[in-house]
View 1: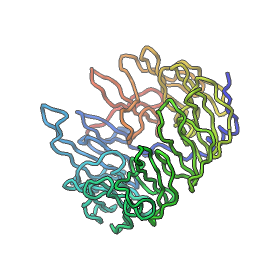
View 2: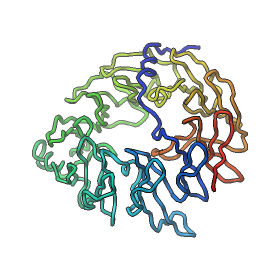
View 3: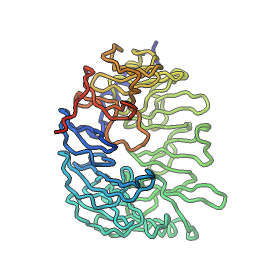
View 4: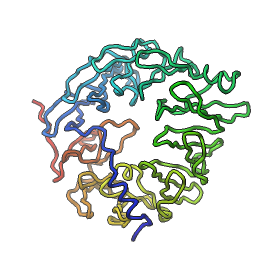
Length: 431
């Protein structure tokens, strides 16, 4: 069986690989008594399991948190402290800040957002406060600037420089350049940042229609259009969304340039950026997928009906690419040929030549690129690699330096375990 994927296009994804797992270092999560720490590939403890969460390593540091909960009520959080460790597992910035969710707390351009007494500010890589905590919200720096919020007012957001100086306030500049009567504007993306010197905002008119605008770092509005939203720019283009979009049932995504001009005449739902100038798109009505460039030119014919290709595998240029049909998973090679049939209810990306797959009876297999079984994990352990949150700091279910981290149920409790390519489980040295 062969899918309609042109060899040269898929090969392009393989040759242009530039996305790796977040933490490609010899450190792995381990869990003890409900807390997490770090071990190396030999099972030696690098950071004791005293923490509630360990974040991504960015610029050589990762955020760690300790959460204190009420004894009789897990959801009643009494106190949470946040600090940072280095890649050797050493605490280099003491846990003295309040918790901040997701990637907002990660270092970016030598600075990180911190929270003290419910106010946000910034520290440098030495842990020194360089912009005092005075904001009701703050976001990571990008291209030398960051978005902050004053007085808990979503419309009172501004762009600041690395000295904490306000460059401009979004609402004020909007009132001057577009509509002096507007009282409220919203920044479009959940983590608003400059991207290619552009940042999108939107407001609602008297009829409930969303009007989107794009600012540059000088506070100049580059264009204004009737759009629901505009995602971050990359390589001069962005994905835009129409108003009145019925999510999943209507084609309402298209590609625009840096002047707001529409580049794709056809609309889709969704559009996923794969690589530079390559997008995987789907027609919400027919379910057809294909790969296009920024102008809507088709780089591959429509992919076989009912088949879904893994966007992540295309982005990360995996050894083989996951495909899904009728709820079952298989893999294609770079020529678009189905090399591992639709046999598994769940499957991971290939990494270091191997992948984990799950059968209907909960048995988990580790397979090679030919589909051969390398080792098996008994169904009684309910081995899994899924994670319920979008912010995953350490990859599960993929091999990294010859070792994979997965979740297994042992003696009725969920635990984190590590297995090598022969199926041997790592023993943690707790001396």
